[in-house]
Image 1: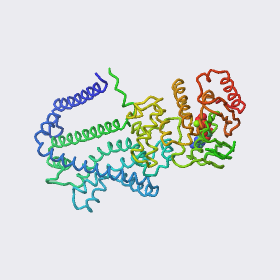
Image 2 (image 1 turned 60 degrees about the horizontal axis):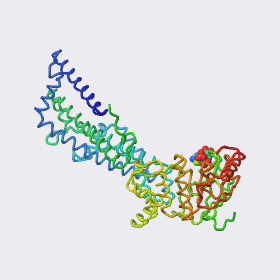
Image 3 (image 1 turned 90 degrees about the vertical axis):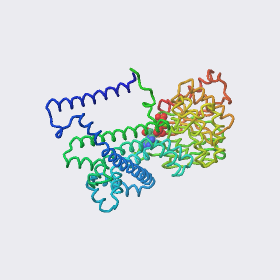
Image 4 (image 1 turned 60 degrees about the vertical axis):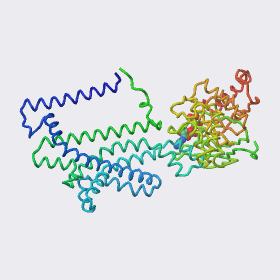
Length: 266
Length: 252
Ligand SMILES: Nc1ncnc2c1ncn2[C@@H]1O[C@H](COP(=O)(O)OP(=O)(O)OP(=O)(O)O)[C@@H](O)[C@H]1O
Ligand SMILES: [Mg+2]
């Protein structure tokens, strides 16, 4: 068995043990299901409420993905501009850092005032949360190039654009992709927080609204079910982004030597 | 040596780093067009600094630098590390200087393939740097330097990281190419033996701040036979360079 498969098995076993413990404790102490439902009750509720929860998940995921695209586009563009011009770097960075330190729950109501369409406002809020790690990583990656590679470009009189396109951007790619991986989960968090702030109901209700709604109606199992769904979506998103990152780095021969090595078998 | 017809002239070059370290003090160096010169000196004496100044990558604190001909593509540098771009294959790496100089694609490929053939790597053209051995990577680096057909080739301990056998093979290849094309070479090395085997002239530098303190001609015609390395004269010349290094006050 390879080390990675053993790892996966161990992780599944730990998770299963935790779930068993949870179910066992709930049954042992006869905790009422409207206080703390056991995993089986949550699973049953997940199934029962699938027609409400899955569309809600789709809405939230849609917001998060759109926000991720917007954030990555803006961050990479601004990162390139910041590296091209010191003046722009001085203009962009303080604003970006300020936006980063102000929590999105506080910003969301402001954005909701100015942006008419709620969906657009939600995407903006989530993008705001996802934006910073991509920007920071893009700037780091673009600036941290090998001095000898840079000398090589200078030796042949490379223009700034040539240096950017053929040296800085490819060299920064591992940094940018790592930033996107972090931004993916942040976008999801941002989407949920923004939904809480907006409190949208009806057709476009996301998971956050369903959690709030279940709380009002004391449907605790449904709250748990929505949370489980959210966590699963977050893990899936993270896993997909990481897989994409790995594939891309390997294809471009940018994978660290460590990764290129076959994993030792046990 | 006369300065007319020289490929490179450094006159009274001095370099002080921003941290106050004086790397070079009053360095004079003239390379005749088509000559092969080796530069040896104790570690940290300013050989790499000299090379970077000669390449135009570093402006000296004082002194005069002249290259003829000058301009992008006329001067090439082979660094100690191969300095390849990991995301592109061998052909792409060798064509990079041609691309930066704005040559059309067909011309780029033709010249890159020629350079690749020169170093005997035509079978590896679509491999990436992480799929090559250390010796192959250095060959790619040499091919990239030769791709623009430079008149001046500056080499900074290019084969120092390689094993003895590979290093000797590359030394021999370099000499073969030089005999064919007669570009001007300045070859920095830690190895006294390599310097004497390759060059028409060995320059010895003093410890920091670096100056050139001795010039030892190696009157052995090129192409040099393998037997030269085993000759008494070779040993005597190496001894002379080592003595000069010791007299200058440092180990190579
Ligand atoms: N970027 C730099 N900033 C400050 N000092 C430097 C810098 N680069 C080199 N030096 C100093 O300048 C001196 C000469 O350095 P250089 O690299 O030219 O030596 P070298 O002869 O090539 O040595 P080696 O044989 O070990 O490669 C050294 O004392 C070094 O400490
Ligand atoms: Mg050096």
